[in-house]
Length: 213
Image (tube, rainbow, N blue to C red; front, side, top):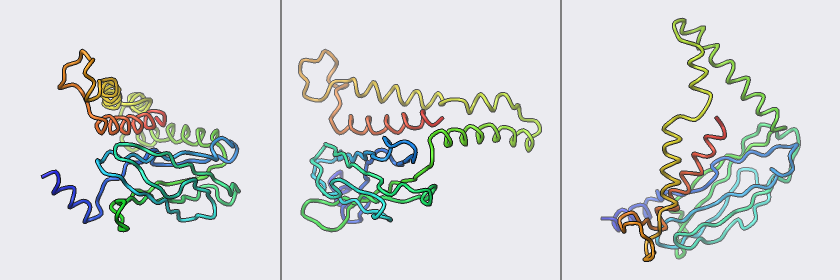
């Protein structure tokens, strides 16, 4: 059954592609953000070839825009913004990562990552803060019976579900790996490298979501 599903994904080009982060934000006034790293994960039992495409390739330099990822491994792709000008502020560019098997040319899966250049990190934080302030006010004007302080409390931090998922992912990463015979933990709690890669990927997404709240 597992082999049949794998073959169906390979034929239809629906193979899930795991990339972190899923969004790149460059700040013109912070040179350290002009170079960022995309991490491509391969949780599968076969090697993958990858290729990075871009809607505006003249604005970026991609180090190792094509290559291969070994089974149950990952690779870092460095992306540099080389055209930091005010006329590009707020423009959303897209990168597409296509993956295929070593012996094939047809793309088995793809993932798009949005890239945006903003003038300043401080201005971005100020706009987000103003937006958070305005949203509860607009809700209280439209829903006259809503309790405004409670709305602020709900939007002030990560939800309990988000924190719970983060704790579960951290616990999964701390569990021993399959094949670790010296561990005192019961064998049914040993996780494979594939499962730990997925847990690390989910934990990265949750961490980004917490920092943005």
